[in-house]
Length: 341
Image 1 (cartoon, helix red, strand yellow):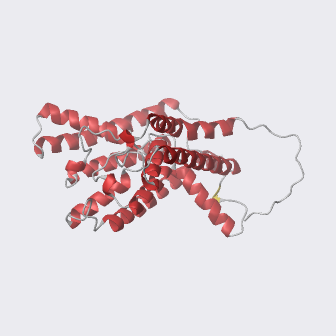
Image 2 (cartoon, helix red, strand yellow):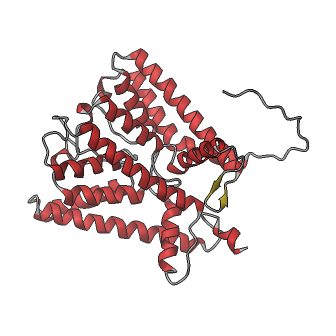
Image 3 (cartoon, rainbow, N blue to C red):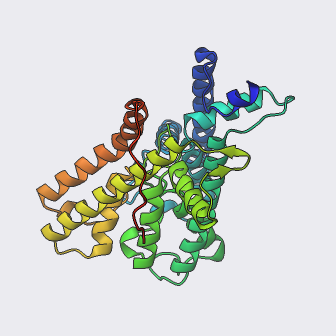
């Protein structure tokens, strides 16, 4: 019974304890980041105390909730050389994007430090995939933009590394930018598209298809290549229903992005990389842009609005609907295997 209970991301325990954990974690992280930012705006950028406090709290909340709103005309480009601004924001974005189940599990782990803690499959997939995507994004941004004179090219090595890391973090639906995306290479835009499409953790502030969905598909592919029929993550067997939900969510998301991109290409004269970037950014509720949004005609902007709403509500609603609409069959049809590939 203990093993079965430990495999659930959120058990049927004390709801008050869960809510308390979420509130405490949110308050502590946002307050800590706000304090660091306030001190930096006050001491490093000469802002008055009231203004510094306002800027610190606003950007801390915006980062933790993956909103990406900044109170500057060029977002955070003026702070591209300031690690005391970018790193706290990056931490808040990553932590906020992990999702409520991970916060609860971290909260429980912190309260039971003397006991042996068994991490759930959801936590393992979320944390491992998040770390892997951050590393891949950091390496890709650094490699593709290192010599670009409009982005990293004119910076010092330290600033190049700082901004490559920050730009690897923000496509996870945060929406901040310390570099102008309109000046980035086509390859970088496609990498950003992929990061935005995956998004962050489930049941949290992030958008996209979610890292656990992406990780499950990777395990399905690995399992099929090995010629096995059951998907395992560590010493746990993944429920078939979860795999079916992941495949359905990704397939519908890809179809929606494809159709929306096709429509916008028909309405505008922009290039594929620009339009695809806008579409994926809207679907993943990121808010990044190459600067063409204002020049898209009204029908195209309405498509982007629809994408933002669907991307925020759609995957979660779809997964919930698939889980709730299961009806046991009283009979089974004969099985037949079609030719695949």
